[in-house]
Image (tube, rainbow over all chains, first blue to last red; front, side, top):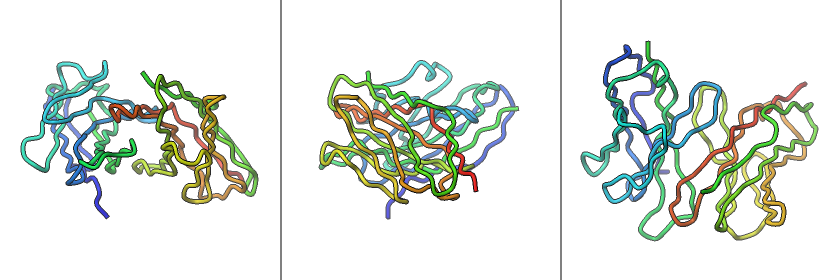
Length: 116
Length: 113
């Protein structure tokens, strides 16, 4: 069964360093998303991406964040200069084919980011 | 914009007892509604979803939820709790027009032997 894959599963970085989290969405999906979950807290929406551009972003998604679909398969989240409060689990998701969708998002297993 | 509210951040039941996790939604358009389960140190697994077919939706692991438009609710139930049901449960809503999904704060279910 097709699935969303994320790498790395865990990354430890120093404050101020750049981090890139990678995702391979389900191949025939058109919408891509990043969500964040700080330990013990709710799953928060960061950004949605469609047709090679951001379609919506939350307040959390400030200038330190960017997303890119550099080729036909990868979808990346970059944090330019990490802060301690960026430590969280980051979930990638994808949804909707050309034939439409049911609103269901398919999530990856997550990438845990630890900022020291 | 759509949102969900989960009543009760922590629910504790005895093994074999009824599980009831509450979720109320707010949406300006007919919503899609979902329940996800998250086991410790794992990702999000879809339990069930409502997409405007039957209002009573059956999911995996014996869970079900009923969409009640008049109450703007989508509560999750299971007749008999099992130890393996202990996890965090998230209710979520998405807007049919843009597919963006928003999650509730989550309810941690503890099952006592």
